[in-house]
Image 1 (cartoon, rainbow over the protein chains, first blue to last red):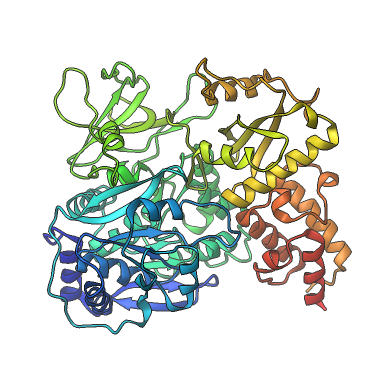
Image 2: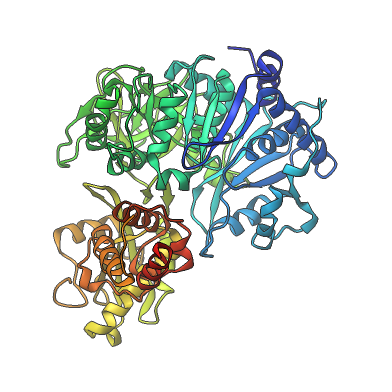
Length: 550
Length: 82
């Protein structure tokens, strides 16, 4: 592995050493290649973008990256890096204009520039900059042979907004040193080198798509084959065909993607599929389910898929990306839970240069081996903190274990370590709902619910996650005013909630339960008790707005 | 390629939507917007794929956004089948 201190060094090394080799390829839903960039072209396009940005922004200023699926994101991202303008990747605003975090992110990081492709400059209407001339279409910028400036390792390589709620987003500040450290840890944990090859459908604005897929491929000098998330959702077998055709050895994504492949498997469409070279099938970004691994292994064994390829892992943006992962080729370890019927899947061990601790979140004392507590991590990959939020940064990134020195990252997740140091995530302290790899904050969903119908009042509902045989699902419990307790009215209220939540959050509510006024459990200070509401829901202990559930 | 009337497609799509949403088919209104039924873009794409498999045709997933009720979607598909 070359000694690189920043992403800019890395890009240069790849362009110098293997300029003609394919870096990124982009495919449509049928597996036809639409675009390709070799390392030299990537470098030249990035240098062109950098020179253009330098005329428009100072080092340290921020640039939004708002791209449709394709290859244009990557030279724009790397152009920001060369110009020392901090890239802020964002999803394209949705078609059904629900409320999303973009506007609050704009207000939080105050970007000078916003980059996209010429055909999507229309998004400028949805994301207004202080200076509208800051919108730039990077696909029209001429490539250049060089760009002289380079960032320093302690400068920010990325501002990653995957945490925080819609109204109060949190941008994780990832330095070049953090990123290079985590890329090195990932390469070692997954056993990647320049002979590796990648196939990914996870979006580049998401930390897993960007870091574990695209930047890791760049780091080890492996070609990366990309397809759009929506294309994968429609034709997941195309991803498997890329893996087969291009002899891919590393490919993965959130758990639901593996389920989707099994659901959509048609023997006639999968004929000739060869998955025998698939060495690391990583699974992360949402809880890893033993049942999914089982059914995927069974369904794809006839096509050469080896069960040992499964690679459950755990991470989050606050640690750049990866926190734990196992040894490639080692069998997946599963432990039965005491109360919970679903077994817990081990997500590997601490990475090289990293420490993990299981800590009692109240007493801040270490928990013994095998006992459940909050997962804490420390190492060179732990990010610098949240942008412009010193208090939240201190709480999350500078936690102390009683009687010990040194700062730790609090993950907000619960887990335990076994006798071999394997980490089993078992749940969350934070009230987060993770569906299809996307984090949803209950507060955001509750706000949508209470505003969608006049019979609903503010601060009288709770949204929480429910583990089902099909993965994590959203449950909404909400009090309704007495005036709306006729059966017909209740159906109307339920439909309104379903529509509002589906449109605004792109999640189908699994259950909507309407409650009598005062039925929702709250603390004496009036705080909604989501976990108690969840327990009462499971036990059937909530007072319903009508006698029985339809 | 299968021939199917708009009515047949609508009834079939309602049954499939009922499975996806885990609700009885009779509670799924053919004239309600897909989002009102609780179909988000991922589940709408899933429904389109199931219809594709059933009919043995390829359909543009955008159809579900351009014709956002089960009845209108079925009519649009029937029209394409000729």
